[in-house]
Amino acid sequence: MTASDHLPAGAAAHGPYAVEVTPESAGWGHCSLRVLALPPGGRHAFDAGGSEWIVLPLAGACTVEVDGLTLPLAGRADVFTAVTDFAYAPRDARVELTSRGGGRFALAGARCERRLPARHGPATGVPVELRGTGTCSRQVNNFAAADVFDCDRLIAVEVLTPGGNWSSHPPHKHDEDRPGEESVLEEIYYFEVAPGRHGAPGLGYHRVSPSGHGRGTDLLVEVRDGDTVLVPDGWHGPSVAAPGHDMYYLNVMAGPGAERAWLISDHPDHAWVRATWRDQPVDPRLPLYAPPSP
Image (cartoon, rainbow, N blue to C red; front, side, top):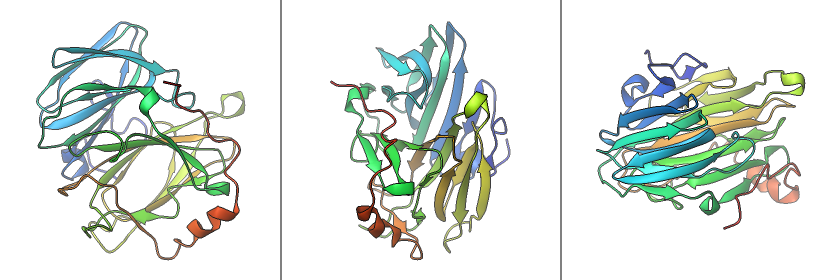
């Protein structure tokens, strides 16, 4: 595979994975993402190596076997219909997935030092946050946010943006080490876009602009279902969903800092937009769904 900041659907396919982003292919130090499709009765095993991993059902259910544990994941029909449960697999483990009915599964990884216990993350424990208001309204499923689920390095959340709305806005960055203010985090965006009327394929747009740090990433791309965008540095946002097409993205983050924290700086030209949110209602289409009751 060759490194690129925008990986259209199929461009990062490798072996059994529809998407495979490694630190080597991305040209950075920590984050990984794989998207695995299993047929009914399918099975897949991998070695965690020096990374911790979260197995996140995108569509379908599976069973994860790791460290002598059997972790059934109820999963969901697709990313637009429900919060899902997930499984955590530590570094240096052998991980095996089986799926009676088949499905698609994201494997979010980060190189790490500590070996934490394997465990199940229930859907009932996933905080669902409504962030922003008006046309900046979006839903964030904070399943592995830094203050929600214990990992060594990995941070991961899901964002759902109703058609016509902007998310990842105001543009923000996390490419400088400024204690208490900003943390250095690599980031992967994996997109799924809901089809429109009569199954018409959807699209969105994503922007990354140079911040004066790192590689000077400068990117404005049309994103479609199955695309991946790498954010090694820079101001990122907005992510814009086309009218009539709800947009999903999975964010996978990790960095070198001693503290596992999501600390960001807003772009100074656009930070003012946050102050306008208190005067507008949240988009009534949200939440698209809530976690199940305990």
